[in-house]
Image (tube, rainbow, N blue to C red; front, side, top):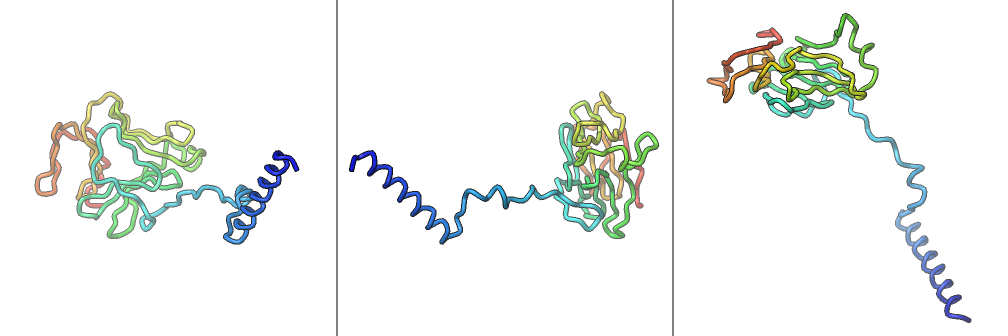
Length: 187
């Protein structure tokens, strides 16, 4: 028998042995593409869903992605980017929504943003805006090129954008030059 035939037989036997070991240990490699499931879609709608909080304040260039949000330092209020595309602020004590950007140009957000998921950006041009997966603008605070330094989910329930360099709270209260606010104090 030639050395080429011996090498081919040895290679075939090796492949058979590896396949048998794979069967014993469940290492079937070839059909995994048939059994792989689609990537898990994030699902978070409402005040009791699981969200990942990125703090109570963000600066220009920051993004709030799907199922992420801001939470006030006293845990009483949260602003969250829901998987249905809505950016909503909740009073966490009552679990009631107190603000949402669900209307754009008089059209309910569900009709306006067909491409999910959405994300909200405190942009480097200082605008606070929500985009869908296709990059379409869904909502904006209208602050492009109006210099600002911080977006804060405050302990009083107000979401505020400030133009105050070095902004820090004093006894839990943020004081500075507010250029936009949700006007939801105490709701």
